[in-house]
Length: 454
Image 1: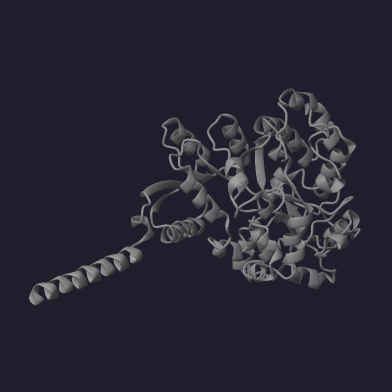
Image 2 (image 1 turned 60 degrees about the vertical axis):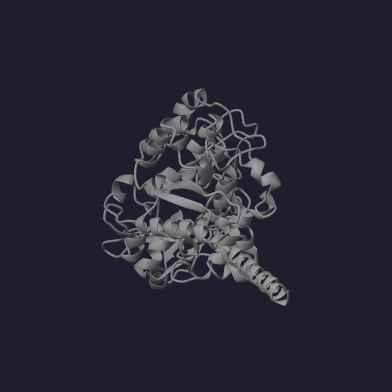
């Protein structure tokens, strides 16, 4: 009898130990083995080889954090929209991907994209209030096509050494101290040098033999100064284009005059013989560059002694924003998991290398307001010059304005009318007023309305 009792006690102890071991093994298993269904998401993106590596690393980090969600990353370096269109037609669209704003808005209207407002209303971590202004893109009231995965703002970049050689004051970094247009123009004239060493203010200046231009800009950014003139390419009522507005015309004409009147900026034809912006500054072909902040990566790598200031102003200090949206396919089979990955992408911590290099800007507001987070990207050299916080970061947060085509329906067809007309302006054959007057009716005939700002 005693032996039987001892045997029972021993068996109970053994069973208890086995149970305890089983419990410990269960708690140490990967999360995906604890009730989570294994999910695979496809993530597509564009970008350089360096961006590809960062995106691959982001996908890897995400799966390490959420082991039950596998990310199949697809890098599409060229013909991006065409390839995505083909994938949608074949019912093989990626779950998550960035896309140009015009396509995002059109595809959202066509039902191809998920309405992200459904997530934003319920999520306690990622809310509209947690994002910087101008980062949420709507295609209709309460319908969100996407959120900018990174922000991009325009600023004034320059070669510090050329300013020192000319004895010219450096551009201001604070909005309240922004140069007037007259101050900017005079500086550009002092920094434009012909082959004989005369600047553009000299009576002996030879505009046909320029060695160093004071400034450069891309003519596709013809509307860069329009917000600063307290104007808009779209009418206040949102029912037409504003191409014949005196304030719009004045802002664009000032850009054209840099080329054709004052000869301080190269024309599109002359620009063909000038290298990329970073190399142009580094090789002293250009002293200043009105450009998007993405140029900072190349500037940092070129080792040029560069600086950054706020854009010159007309009536108020503004910068134009150009970040492209991240979207989720409406056909995704895993919307919850797609949103989890989406949130991960929007957190600058996930792709910190690209932010600290100067290529990307965050969209989460905390990265603009919390000192510890700001120092992780906005102060990092060589991609960020001294003064970046005020000239670009704070300007984006407080004085940023989205490019007009975030809100313009049928923008691609309209721009296909406007841009060729402006080609005649850059060549000095027509004024902006003449060019816009000639195409205003045709462009307005393609006007199909606007998208909401919120």
